[in-house]
Image (cartoon, rainbow, N blue to C red; front, side, top):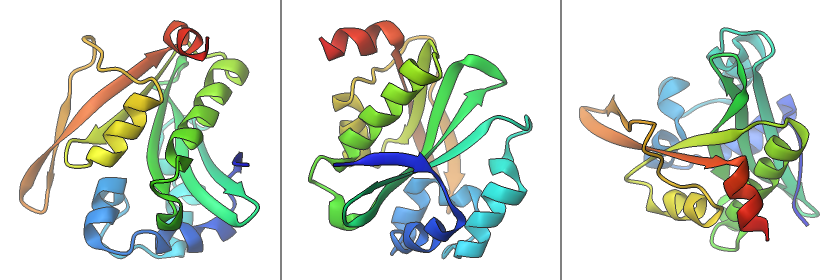
Length: 179
């Protein structure tokens, strides 16, 4: 059974080991951490000293997902521009041994339940690189949709332009999907 808890510094060693190649690191969002490979110390510095680069103090919530066998996944939650009705998920990564077994969808389901039932947000957004179809499928299966109100964005990575598709799920859509 997959469960969620706040991130602990000791989680970093497992999480960074899942970025076993540069492409995995980049689609995870590693370019925001710096050069590949990332160290556990660099991850902890980004999270604990730099507050995930969030300007607001109480706005960055890294979470770890685990089961009986250990850590299985990780993501962060943050409010958009201090708006406590709109939550953004990011830096989503799954243990390679857990991929293709429904863990990603379950991880997102748990995060959405927390967002809507505990944090009481009205909507949750997530961005995904178009060159990461497995993640895109996972988010769509979890109930995210392509909204007309959020424009996609682009990042220059290693001399290429990568498109980030913006996805959203509202509380109403979440509740409808649960029925």
